[in-house]
Length: 633
Image 1 (cartoon, rainbow, N blue to C red):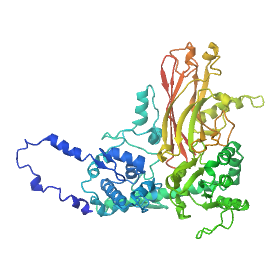
Image 2 (cartoon, helix red, strand yellow):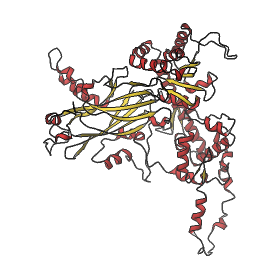
Image 3 (spheres, rainbow, N blue to C red):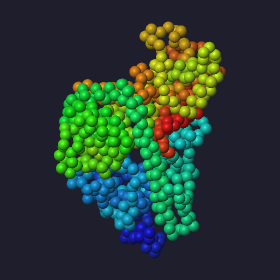
Image 4 (cartoon, helix red, strand yellow):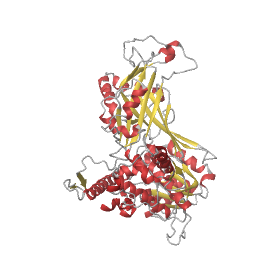
């Protein structure tokens, strides 16, 4: 790799010229040098004509507008300075030819390229075309980005989110939350290296993190790096990265195989179809909004039995592409559409339909759809999917919906449903198993109930919580707009504040104010909206709330390490100042919490949830508990 510095030869000083000959430097003007630096601050975007005064601003723009996350790519692929340098020149060269840097599809014009740009869905399958030494030569002469990205490349984000720290939370014995600044410090700054830079343990972008880089397992073969060889260091590093990527790719394939295989069971589909709240919400949104579906080209992501595709065909869609990854269910969906006279059976070559059907079932993952069917970019009018899992985000199917949105949905096209909102509230003793075990055919078995509650502090439960057992107010945890959100927004961290819920706030006595209630944990649920943005005739809300009819999603229960006594702040009750806040002698008036949710690193269709709790007493005293980690798998 001796060629790496050849292009710099014109600007490098000869050793003799670089020596100090004792000449007078008194006329050197620092201000002039600063002015020269300012000229380099006009950095041209990699994809459009926008100008920025810093590389960090440019990369933020590229991530938000052009789906190019420079930092994530360089970290995930473990690109060093030179490889990152190559990447910038490679992207500029591809854009100049109206070619997508990621999939290398050639567009007709710059505008077509802007419309085509999409997220790189699977970096595990990415090859390195920019590794060619020709990309060490600047594609754009005097490119300021090549001189400034190094500073951005070497520094870590100061605003590292709690989502990327869940793995740190797992190893943290205790997090103190005496005040807000302490909460920030402990959540965001667990580990600091000697050089002052933060260590980042990402839960969603750690596919190349190898515990021992000198030992990599690929298809059961132990690949060892020859650490004694300096000549082949670069090639060994590249092989190490490729080996790690191969191992992770195999793991992802196994996870996907098991996941889609589980949907071959008819029992699962019967449970979902029998969920009237779920199925009726989709049916009404599809059939009662003729302006949305009539004559529309529809794509159904994860069609299962094809029930939503059948509704779309019934509503007058001109074509329905029903995509199903499970081989068995794709075959079943095809047979169902055929038996109901709705299967499209035209020839792929001449597109002549032999019947009146409009549904075409395609077996495979949507990320590989273009390998199975000829579908033009941005040609779909309506993107339809029932993608929600437990706690909304379990199964990580939302990322597939967003992939289809970015690649095939028309500008102005519709997503059904188009919004999703997560809620949280505190639950009481009735939401646990304690009442059941207190009276078992007249016998007291409460010791079992208490042990089960203690064990539940490390495991999330999916169960139905009665609305009567909600003991705090309800607050929004997170909201998603599926038309605008980015895939990385599925990993988030939110602060909430819970207060005791009064039975009847408009007609309360002092006794009801001063009543102490025990909060055993928090319960999470979600709503999806078929809003008037697209469902103009009849907007619909699909709710999994404890206050609504139950669904097969139930609610997700996170149990505290110990129950917390709470009482209304309006009561101003007598309390023991020496007692711990959150006990019966000193009930809390508020519960502060931070909840972080991220796709699990080891099993990408599972989610990790971190729960931090601090309580506020009547006199403002605070008490906190260690962070709890829950894995929903």
